[in-house]
Length: 587
Image (tube, rainbow, N blue to C red; front, side, top):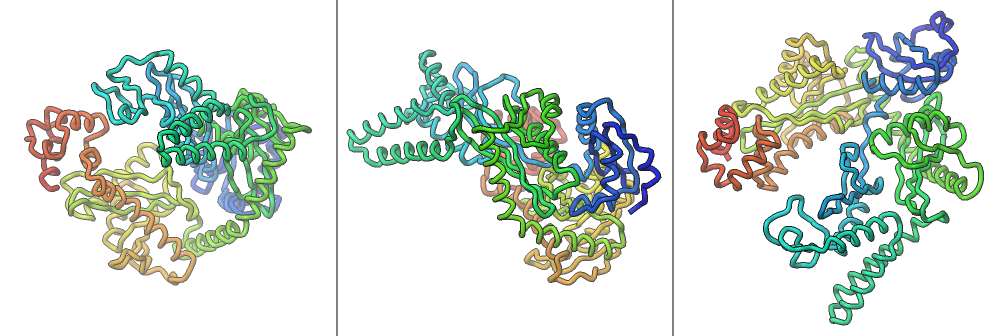
């Protein structure tokens, strides 16, 4: 670790954003601080652990930008993180999105589970988030069964099965009373806000009616549905005003781990929660603020009010998010905040030993890998494998790992040119496309490329990386006929001295299994579905628009295979039509 004593002495005590750089001048971390001097000194004078320790060891230089307020420093921090995507700020970028329940505001509304709510421009009714997607789907299925809403995405010309089983009013061909639609929508919205009286009444009436008609199977099913609702509400109900809607965050820290809990309260009901365990940083409150910003950046919908514990800058969050942010000191809300802390504590106690063991194993494996490859840093790894369909028509898969943890948002699939007929040709195309894009779009360059194969695969990677003027370490994972890892080789084809029972060998075996699974799953899904739509996904040059046009024009695989190149070229370009024609003759 470098000595920054002289440079730290010149840092002002003002608010601002700071940027940590590695030996290559790449920004690896962006942070903010009320007091830049104190914050930066804490990295190099205090004791650090886990990921912060890895960060500090990786720092070769730092810069800072002074701002006039902490809010400005927060805005600048978020802007720089989005611009540079630093590897130690991944908690702001790698989390999943959460499902919401949407009731559309169309003439004939639909009820469904949705994600990516930031993209919604028509301001439909949205309720959630629901961290448990199964619960969200179960709720939607129940409501769609009780209320005969429109089920199809596009209206057809004739009624479908849903009409005949009384789960649709036949919006495509029947005259439907608008008042009835408005009444259904009103009751559904009331239910999603926490008032289940309408639903319970309807189910109870249906249950009695089914029983009177001696349809005991249906009556029993309806009774179970009613019990599910009542049990769920009893579990979720908290002693608050029925119209109270807010989120709340609390945390628990122990042995360098930070456990965070986020509760969602809607209509006096605890509808769900999000939880996260992180390596505790020098400033846990900064981590909690980053977590909050990351969550709402992903979810796209803000609550009207957010409750946070003491120590969190409520004014800063309120100014940035433009919502009310408070720290309750007493009463029911304080008790609920304490409940969130207890939950954070319980989750950490339950998982702490496993987390510590896994962290230790990963750190040991990383240190062993550094020694074997004789490099100072190896964190980001990109692994590749190919798969083919019917002996041809290859696809490629790339999985990404950071410190031996998967970054699933960064996995990528590749359609490969139809004229590629062998595994090495397929791999050559995938690697070139990947790292040409890395150069052109200034994406993250990995520390290590992991090839799912022996010396031939490694040599292909060396040629591509060299031709693009990049300098990236490469290894190959040699496998047996059962696709199990048997050895690891370096870019010169020499076997690395890695014991098969070591943590390092185990981690690479998992990476090899994952990239193989990822690459082959696409083709397996195509074979399992046997669907024309899925088969067209494989052909390069055919995107969503062209695929829909082909499906509309030909309708079935049989008719598509009977089509001539001229027929196909009426929908797609001639070169794509020729590739599609060859492809269809092979399957």
